[in-house]
Length: 212
Image (tube, rainbow, N blue to C red; front, side, top):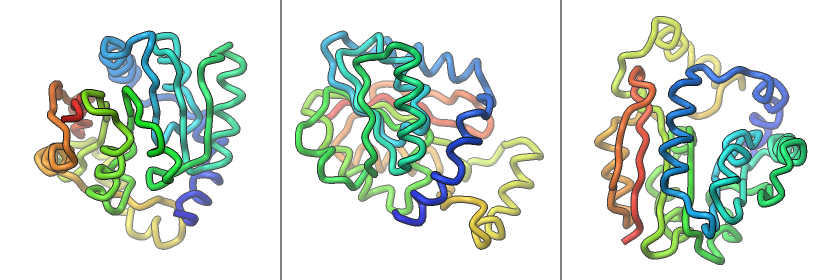
């Protein structure tokens, strides 16, 4: 975890300035997610990065806790929320395995572009299951690289990934299949109520799952 935190700390400033690759898919994700949020909901976002999504969705929820294991990402997120006047968003430095995130279950837990960056997906999902109240929602979006179908640029990047990881230029990346991802979510005690791919290539699987 410490190594991953240092990697994302180094990347934080550049990450904050990077444009979103597929704005149409991102906006659609926000719209679908807003449709599930209520103004009374306590929401937790895991792996919030620089807080763009947490701030964008803050108006649809009662209170949002945005967490990331990178201290630098969290600091940028705090500034972003302040500039946007999002007073119902609180940022904390924490990873998925942080026990403090499991003390008081949330109505909704979100994890966008996170699960494929975690080495033990099953353990992470079990911990997420403890963060969601019974009947609450887990909303996630995960690139499933094992399905293939990406651009030439992405395929070349995937070939170079082992070397980039060796020299500290890339994080851990899990090559997930959609069926593998969905089975893991269900094993963690959730029932999937919505699923879709946006963008379609490589499939980035959007899931809404209810805690049983």
